[in-house]
Each structure stands twice: as structure tokens, then as C-alpha cells.
Amino acid sequence: MKIDFEKAVVEVTGPDGQVRSLPFASAEAFREVSKAWLRVGWDTKYVYGFTWLGRPIIQLPDDMIRLQEIIYRLKPDVIIETGIAHGGSLIYSASLCQLMGTGRVIGIDIEIRPHNRQAIEAHPLSKYIQMFEGSSIEPGLVQSVRNEIKPGESTIVLLDSCHTADHVLAELEAYSPMITPGSYIVAMDGIMQDVVGAPRTAPDWITNNPQTAVKEFLKTHPEFVLEEPLIPFNEGLVIDRVTYWPNAYLKRI
Ligand SMILES: C[S@@+](CC[C@H](N)C(=O)[O-])C[C@H]1O[C@@H](n2cnc3c(N)ncnc32)[C@H](O)[C@@H]1O
Image 1: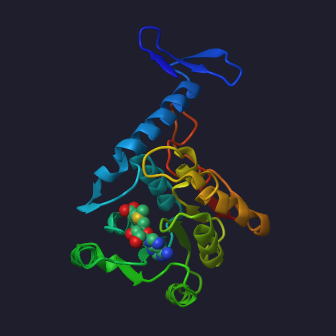
Image 2 (image 1 turned 45 degrees about the horizontal axis):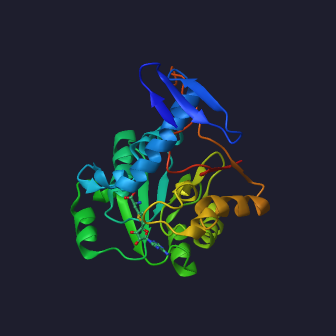
Image 3 (image 1 turned 30 degrees about the vertical axis):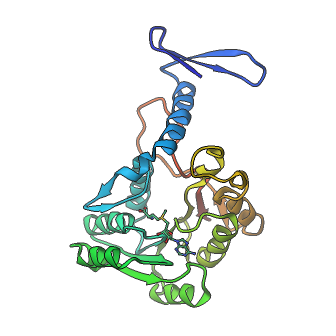
């Protein structure tokens, strides 16, 4: 790919060796530049540079904005997230609950480090958050989470713990029954498949990733569809999400 600022075009070479010239003002040019930007962002650990209301959040900001659009539209009673780390994403969801005047958050992590637990519990939004420590696929823990959901409550589930295909598939099996119709279970970080060969990756990520789990899950779960979330406002030319979560949103129909 070559960016020519003078001509305002992006030049890409196709598999046939043909060079295509994409005008800056096109969805295709934006897609190509975004792909490169995501890869450079991976190598530079761009997503490890943000906080949400004081806690580190390991997410691409674009994904957070899109997620906010969905959460605001659905206003779920319970937002469940596997993978707490520093707690930024739990605080993020809790802040939406406070602003919307509805909802609460359940977080699960195999290891909640004492300094992270302390910071989350001391946070002004902690009253919205309940945490469970243990493997997200351990049946006893899954049952404890289920017990917290009252009959009739709506839920959204975000999977951001261990991103191997097997683990994500097991999480999809464990948490998908908790999803209410119209809502989503989100298999995050499917970008793994696109960054193989970059630093901090493994060759098997080409298949051992959340996107593989999603494909497997769909084979036996016709009650779910892979569906891009509705974009409520778009006066621009860009169609695709810039995302670490390609093919992630599974909607219960
Ligand atoms: C990518 S981080 C989560 C980032 C967080 N959601 C955020 O946005 O800031 C992944 C977390 O998953 C946790 N984890 C790894 N394996 C797990 C498992 N089997 N069950 C639950 N949590 C797990 C790790 O301890 C780590 O804190």
C-alpha cells in the first residue's frame, strides 16, 4: 500500500499484481489505511494507552464508542463481562449504567489482582459492579452468575478473557443461554487472526482465535446470527467498523 498525499489516493496492489488507485474520499481507501493503522497500532501497543474514569481500559476507542451505541439502545439490565484486568471496562459499563439510570455490571476474572480489586471497589461507580473470581467457564462460577440474573432481566455479554478458540467457544456455550432476544454476546479480539506474524502473536492464531469459536458456535445455534450492530448515525462515507472485534456480535433472534 502507498499513500500519495499529492494525488489524494491510496494505491493498493491486488493479488493479480494490478495496482488500484483509491481516492481518499472512498470507503475502500479508508478500509486499507485502517487495516494498516490497526496493524501498526498492534505493534506499538496503542490500545494499552487509555483509561476510563481513572482505570486503565485495554480497548480500541472505536470499539468503546460502538459498544456504547448498542448499550444505550438496548439498555440491558445486566452487562456481563469476562476479563476484568485493571477494571477499566467494568467502570466504563458502570458509567453508562449511571448515565442511563438503569443497569448493573458483573465482571469475571481468573485472577483479580489485589491492587485492581481495591481500586475498583474504591471507585465512585463501584456500587454498580459485582465481581467473581475464577475461570469464566468453570460450571460453578457460571451458575453463580446465572443466579444473579432475575427472571425477565435483559443481558448483554462481553467475552474478553482468554481468547483461544476453545475457551471462547466454551464461554459462548456457557453464557449464550443468558442472552435475551435482540441482545448480543460479543466475542472480542478476533483481530488476532489478522495480526499473525506481528510481535506478541503465535502462528496458530490464524485459526486459534475468537472468530473460529464464533463460526463453530453458529453451526449448532440457529437462535443466534452474526450481525453487525446497527449504526444509528452516519453522514460519512465509511461503512466498516474500525475494530479489534471483527465478526464478534452474535445477536439472539
Ligand atoms: C484483555 S484482559 C481484559 C481487559 C479488560 N476487559 C479491559 O477492557 O480493560 C484479559 C483478562 O482475562 C483474564 N483471564 C484469562 N483467562 C481467563 C479465564 N479462563 N477466565 C476468566 N478470566 C480470564 C486475565 O486475567 C485478564 O485480566
